[in-house]
Image (tube, one colour):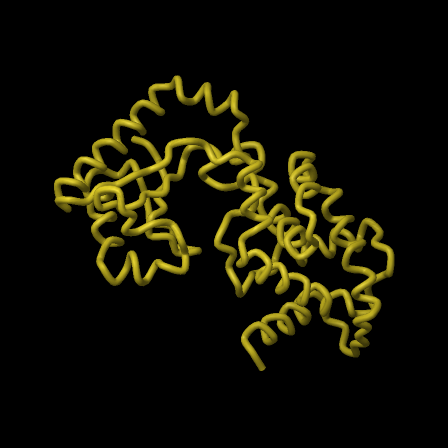
Length: 261
């Protein structure tokens, strides 16, 4: 049995402890959209609005799971509007952040003659995050895992065909507790650190040629093997502790988060 299948069966066992189990996958397929919609209806209106902009169920269901797990952060971590981002750019903290990035770029260029760092300091809007979520391949893989595991859970005849309040919160609890085996390569829309100008992606250039960019498939070849992961880390973390990184899960050697002084 594969690791994914073992995880799915383990999840099923943790949801209910009924000794004798009867599974009805046909019923589960009918129940799944109803339960997902019922859970979505319990979420903050900002999350519901984002869900409505994810047309494919395989990606939408993964987002619902992500929002269930992160809803408690919505008031502090939700992506800024254009006006909120504009207000932040007028603060002393923003100026300190930009000054730190410039200092890191100079340090990196000094340590690696002929090479330079580029970094985008624009906010990653909710619309941009939704666009990536609707296109990136890893989201479909993780979403398929959520669907497959949810079908196993909902195939249990202890679930009603139409979700009532108790059933909705029971399924919500399952989504909240379920740990993915296939980690998405982008944050659930609205919760990217780039959405509050807190995270930055550094790229390595030699003159006009991109040497190490932000493509997951090239991490080993472009970043780790040539040593750029370590060189970037040395330029950033040996400069000061105002940035932490790189991002570990999913692994992104170019991704660092501003924590300030």
